[in-house]
Amino acid sequence: MLKQLNERLAALKLELRHKENWEHQVETLSRELEQQRKLKDQWAKRLKQEQRDVERLEGISLGALFYSLIGKKAEKLSTEEAEMLQAKLKYEEAADTVAELEREIADLHQKLINLRHIEDEFAQAILEKKLLIDRLNPSLAETLHELTEQEEEARANVKELQEAIAAGHTVMDSLGRAEELLKKAKDWGTFDMLGGGILSTAMKHTRIDEARSAIHEAQRDLRRFQTELLDVRRDVNIEIDVGGFLGLADYFFDNLVIDWMVQGRITKAIQELEVKTSHISQLLKRLEEEREYTEERIQELQREKLTVIEQA
Image 1: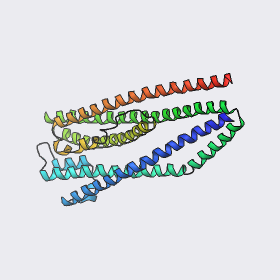
Image 2: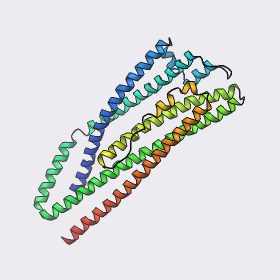
Image 3: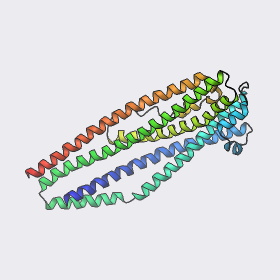
Image 4: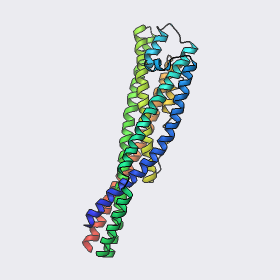
């Protein structure tokens, strides 16, 4: 009976932690959503100031628009064209982020609805356990209760760490894909400068669309990884550097269009991805070490509980 009640309390406590974290995430994402909506409106106005049809531009990929303007390798983008492309790039990134944030917040609200009675359920389970302890050996029950609470906390920490580790591996995959596409763009750019002609120019600008998508996905995954790290830092109480993530997209999208023809710009972008990848790799190592330590602590607590029971 006590074992079943402890298992039920462990599950309820984990759901309470999830509820707290999801409420915190809703607050954080809502603030970011407000900022991204402002950015979206700002860049939409910028496009209109350029006397461009925003709805028409929404239906054209960045690479296709770029190539339609530049035409062939010998031509150069005018300042007006470059500024318009830059505005379109910023607008698309903000619009995609707004849509994703809205979906994420809606999903969190649904999860919170499913847990709307969790506090009452937990309070009821605590009351049941208190009554059970009163009937059993009070000193033995209390000792087991304390050890069980520590084990429950450790198991919840392991779950938080596993979620953060999974999110980190997703980021590594996204960054790897973005780096691969940028390297392909660089290869086509080298061929282009050596006289590759219209085909190489077209292929290079096709990579703009692919790279933009990959970088956006990496930015999204970085945002989710940062959220998981914040949960870990708050709940597991370990020091983890969570800064420097959310500027990835801005780094690539600021002046990307104007400088895309410059091979050095692509090289710097690849180098920046390598720095991010190295940073996240170190974070994952730290998380793995903490998970291993916590799992060992769970085994230790289980041995202590068994000893208490055997000696009773």
